[in-house]
Length: 141
Image (cartoon, rainbow, N blue to C red; front, top):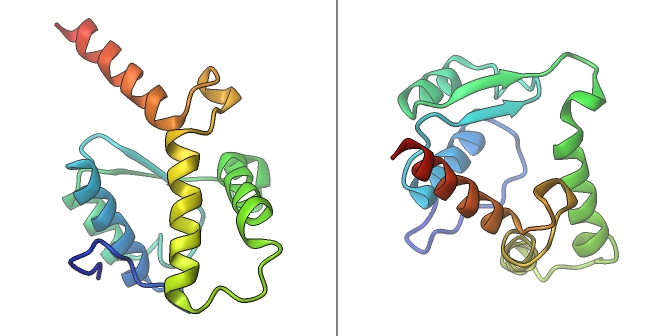
């Protein structure tokens, strides 16, 4: 479970508890996930009853792609490729879990706040979401 400082443990497993911790942290960070869609692969942790129950509790719709279709998960694969290429590829030693966490956190901060993405009209993900959310609120008013 995340610590008081908001840190998520780095784990050497992919059990449901790890994925659940990440989903709980996301819900806390964003102030809820009502209406969100979570697209994932067919890993055992994503198909578990505990994970399904958590998604129901957080009002998250689960989406799973076709088995064996890399194109179905292209956005996620592209994200991981960028993370590895820009942050992790040349590293041989991260100085332990805290060093690795800090390095990935710094990259994620840049990725979400400053890095422009062609799929988002050349806006950062945070700016794209802010504009989209504002537009939805304006249309609803």
